Image 1 (cartoon, rainbow, N blue to C red):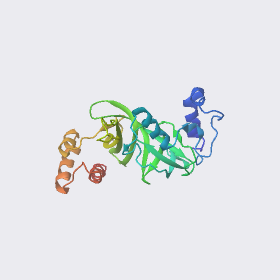
Image 2 (image 1 turned 120 degrees about the vertical axis):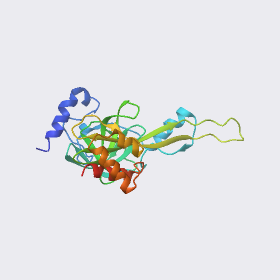
Image 3 (image 1 turned 90 degrees about the vertical axis):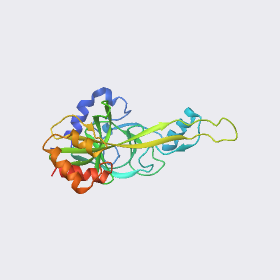
Image 4 (image 1 turned 180 degrees about the vertical axis):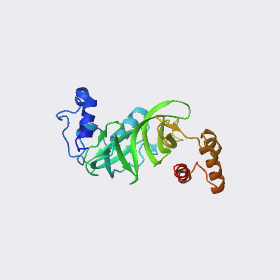
Length: 249
């Protein structure tokens, strides 16, 4: 497959309307974001301070606990369209906004851009896990769209991780004797799985017995024995990865 094939496909799917937001960009042209096509890039976004300033104004609270980001700094990574590398970029994942921010360098003066939420585009996080936009079903049966990191893939299942960030608005102090309650970003981890050949991606339970119950044979019996013999707890990510490595073996 030629290098331009996936980008040409992306361009044909987006069409004229999608490109109208990229002022001065010719469809199919490439920019300087590590060789990444400008068709993959959405609008420019402000620096992290700009985003916190917006929330300060909205809430009237100056103090914050936590962060909307997995890591406040930009990390170098490789970007893919399908299985084809599109070059190196610097990225930062805003889990609260479900947005991947990208730059050509880690320099603070460079304004980051937002990566389009296209399911064929992925970036590598932690030097090994592809992070991409997916449709999935949570434990309450809600169909959601967001970013999942693929932790494992084998003959029978794919295993994914989602970092969900909740924002809680602070409160102004009622008098001068107490402090403001700060705005707060809280991080939560969820895990999802997809059987080979299935279109659905579903949230996994957090207890061993619940996971055994939801599995079909022959996996149910094998899994129950494996968990018992190895004293694993699927609440721990390392143990959960071991479980899916076993199920895929």
